[in-house]
Length: 108
Image 1: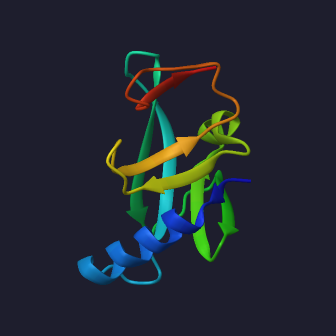
Image 2: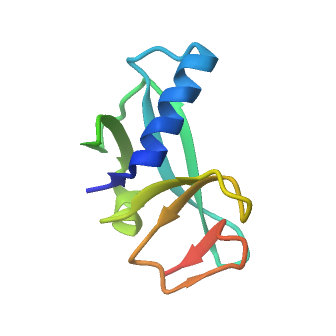
């Protein structure tokens, strides 16, 4: 399962409204090579499912990831912070053994 916090849900709703993104688009989350810790998160709106996609719905938000990324993202929570310490989406990933200072990459 991939979880979505209340703050992330509200921000996604706001982005949908301001960007004219249709309701049939879901959040696609993946893990790619890169960053100072070795792996980075990638997140986008998408409306095309792929054969090995893992599909979850939490807090009214549909989240899709590929099978390989799901191995890294199991039980992760998508968060959003609008505070002074850093504004934007972040991932609270209990599988990460190390993260970089900016929180953009991780290692397992």
